[in-house]
Amino acid sequence: MEWFKNFYEGFVFAFGCAMLLMYALLALLSLRGIRRFQRTHSYVDYTKMLDSPLAPGISVIAPAYNEGVTIISNVRSLLTLVYPKYEVIIINDGSTDDTLEKLINEFELQEVDFAYNERIKSQPVKRIFKSVNNVYDKLLVIDKVNGKSKADASNAGINAAAYDYFLCTDVDSILEKDTLLRLIKPFMDEEHQRIKAVGEPCPECGYVHFAEDSVRVIASGATLRLANSCDVDEGVITRVRPPRQWLPRFQEMEYIRAYVLGKMGWSLINCVPNVSGGLGLFDKEIAIKAGGYDSQSFAEDMDIVTRMCTYMIDNKLKYAIRYIPTSQCWTEGPPTLKVFSRQRTRWGRGLAEIITMHRRVLFHPRYKQLGLIVLPYNLLFEFLAPIIEFTGILFYIYLIITGQINWHYALILLAFVYLYSVMITTLAIWWDHMTYHYYKTWREVIGLALMAFLEPLFYHPLIVFFALRGYYYFLTGKKHSWGNMQRQGFGKKKTANA
Image (cartoon, rainbow, N blue to C red):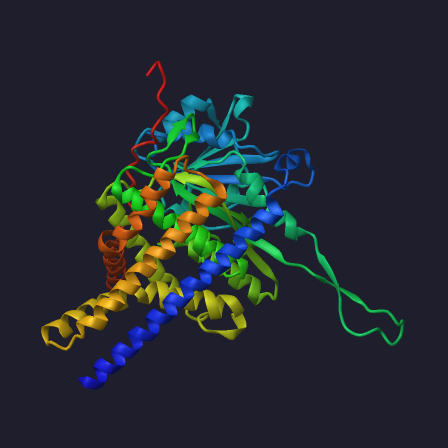
């Protein structure tokens, strides 16, 4: 038993040190990435793209299931995005409420004959609608059989998409008006081919030859935040506030840390693990060749990015995934523990699926960053972390019961880990605020940052528990439905008439 105790203590110590170093590295990479973004984009005039004939078309795909409460205002918001050439595709995924009826009545929809080409498998499409009013000529509504997942509905939207790029979002999300302009820019920046000199002067002609070194951006994303307590007027965020409820407030803090500190750091070294299902712009050609979304997956956003990267590497094509630090998407976070538990259990199960489905890529040198950094990180520091934390608690209890614990060093270690986690979260919130000032007062910023002191005690244990439950569901094959988010609707700006 003594050898096991020594081994476990050594393993946990090494794992903990590696995780702390990884967070420190991500923080430094993130800071550098944000500074580079500000330096290169501070003076960019995005409005010039509105008149540019080179701006590619974008299909905005938004699945909807029982979204009758907010469907009209949210679709109107999508129709008012600022971009020269785009369409909005709403997929009614077999809703059982009045979602489709509201869409038909509000936007004067009429069933049309449509050349629907099923390049990616999905549940059958029953009807397709277009508006008889030219004001809504950008809108296309698909009515299909319920596929029991957002992924299946998204595949139907990709099949109907007219343009080369598609933006996948949630119909309940609110997008900034310039979202398409900002997300398409990384694609356009890399679209031109870089030319470089290679080799020694040619013995025949005496000149150094040139070769094309092209990198294809296959996806881009941006920071996503919660709109639970924000002022919303006609689908536009008019006042940003941290959520008032404790559970969504914890999620806001977590999102800022994950996007600003995490994904911006990964983006700098082209190791972005996934593009959020709430907001992601994709190259349609590569997405289709990679097989589209897996309708059976509980982590469809990570799965499609992994398969797109795998496709590019298998075909010896250079690729990049870009993230920008500006907040472009606002969504309603789970307000109750019941809905939150369902979401995080699904995420845990999805992570287990990703590690299993793509195990051939894991630690494979051929897949470079994907096989040696992205998936190993997900395995070691995302998948294994809840298991190690849980077994560590049990081990601590064992040491306490048997009287083998050194309280002096144990308390110092716990204090260090606790304060380190608080520091990392506080840094992310501070960088976010100092860079873009989304919150109007320091009181709001400090109030959100103080949640970092409570997170290890209340919120993080919930994350660990729901992740372990997701692993259990995966191992036992227990059925777990996606379920409805039970939207409450965004808070609206108060007016005199109200």
